[in-house]
Image 1: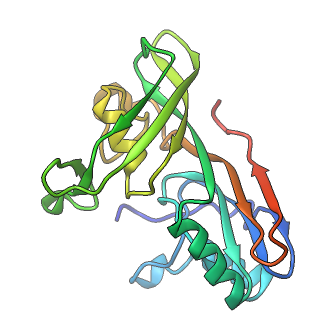
Image 2: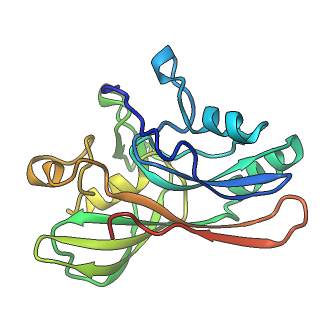
Length: 217
């Protein structure tokens, strides 16, 4: 891992909390869960446990990705939320700024992914052994060198959004794994943000929805 210096302000951005769940806004540069080395213990889960008490990660965002995450605050909710992710009931959308001007206004990518072991944690397209992965994309805005897009994943593979946009010839700007040249140097962070999360509350069964404004839109 590169030098780890997660942002300290705000220490933890809590959008919602009740007895069963918490919705937090993770900054880019902060791990979701602790790494093996002591200097990697600071993470979203650790901070949530310090601030909120018993809080457990249900899903992850890459360290470089910012945006919404849901945490469970009891065992029943952890199981219920985990089941929703497994059955793909939870709705998520992201905003990304990609390199280059996309010609079409929207479309979908359906390419299977597998870990690129010699270059892990990078992933790659593999039609023989890859796991099914689908992403819908929609253009929000264009400028002279880049495109702002909304990305809606229908599966949750590692680096899915990064690799699918790369496959279209429009890598996410600031992506230290897949971008090169100007596409990499144009941003100090990965321009990928989890903007929307919609789920069923694990206790009262109500649909609830949260949004986080994109910091680079």
